[in-house]
Length: 117
Image (cartoon, rainbow, N blue to C red; front, side, top):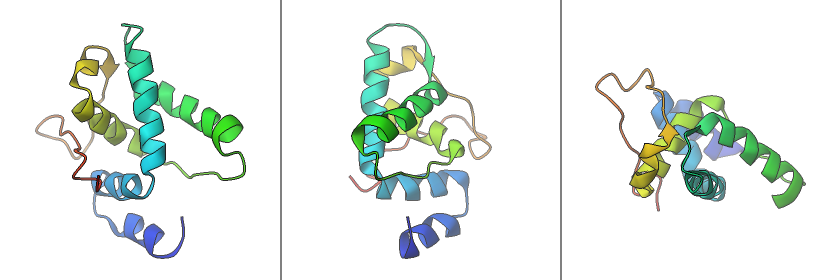
């Protein structure tokens, strides 16, 4: 990510805003996370987004686009999880989410509209 896109992500005020700015410019990566979450949910066992984050990195590196890397800040993981939960509420029974510093009043989901879909 370079130029205006990187500046937009860096100028965001909160981790949530930074994650949303990143997600807006990496919809294909977000969709890869979504598909991995749905697949994990089919196992009907608890899972966390951090495990899937490492799976996504591996998948992108070795099978999807080995010549094109993406930078992914670990603090974006919980926000991607909130978007996945908004799209697939049934996964809440299996996906664990930790509370973030900017969610003092409870978990706030991220919608398609938030990331420009």
